[in-house]
Image 1 (cartoon, rainbow, N blue to C red):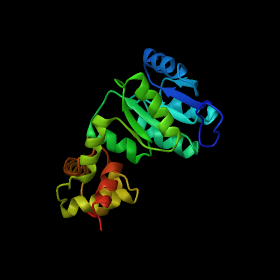
Image 2 (cartoon, rainbow, N blue to C red; image 1 turned 135 degrees about the horizontal axis):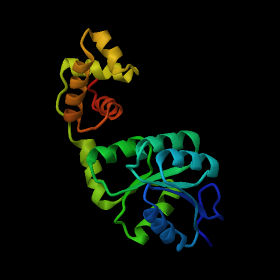
Image 3 (spheres, helix red, strand yellow; image 1 turned 60 degrees about the vertical axis):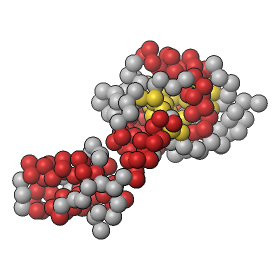
Image 4 (cartoon, rainbow, N blue to C red; image 1 turned 180 degrees about the vertical axis):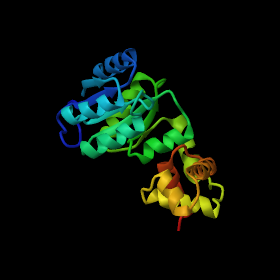
Length: 216
């Protein structure tokens, strides 16, 4: 019997592919279509198109490239999960940067695979995600563990103030006005925070600082 999704145990796992390289999409599609119980229902060439296709097709799994022109895979992940409840997103990428792994997982991705993964690893990942379990290439599991367990460097008082205001949704200009400093100074504090926390954007910085109790 074909392996189905949790909500449709007798049906195939419906997959949407999103990558800005057509040859990559075709390769992934060929590997998945060769597996019993998996069907590729659509392809997208950008993050924006992936969101539109996901809303229209309601796939069980979206395999999403991390870095595409325009909307990246992390932002697309968040939008797909908000607009298509029940859909699982698995990031498939060539990149292994710690901050990218953390951003993808924190955005709600069910897994993170490298494009060099084998056909069977790809199929297993889709089936695992469809069961509601987390998918992570073994070489990346240690990286994610280290990024979550290594204590970040202490933040200065002003860096904590800036991140608290970021957490309230303020822009850099609004934070500068609140703290009576220039917008450039705010950016400097944010960049220092990123470096200390091992992240690459403001949302991840706030989340990691909160996780380690640095904003209390």
